[in-house]
Length: 207
Image (cartoon, rainbow, N blue to C red; front, top):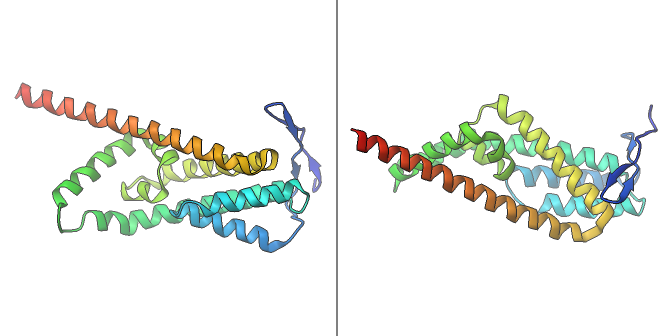
């Protein structure tokens, strides 16, 4: 059904009706702008994607754009951008980081630790790091693709619906969430490195 309507969702105490149609109204250039900005952001340049989605969602709240179509476009752009960043990291980033030159031994050790981290905590790593990092650490596409798509959807829904309901203040919320995410990731990395160092020390002592 082209104009089918979902039952209103609850966002906190607020209910938002979402229309299941993909025939956007409003300036097509706005949707194209959101698509391009999302691609660029998820490929590795932070900032423009969230700004574009926030601005477009506020416009949708004033009935100038269609929210469901906006979210779909943002999801598509983020998913494509995430794949592009992963490919760049896989094809060029790893070779650049491991290339002969100053501190190569140190760089190789860092990459090796990152590989182990991604192998063990791939879901967390993809959620909280730029897409090209997953490529540098050679994360397999079978694992990366679904995680990338799911995180892109969560981002599009969270930022889009948040801006629709809360307005520009959602930018501060996203920033705070990002700060917490980085702290969690940093703690996991430190814990992983510590465990690895302790295991290495025990093996050396046993020998």
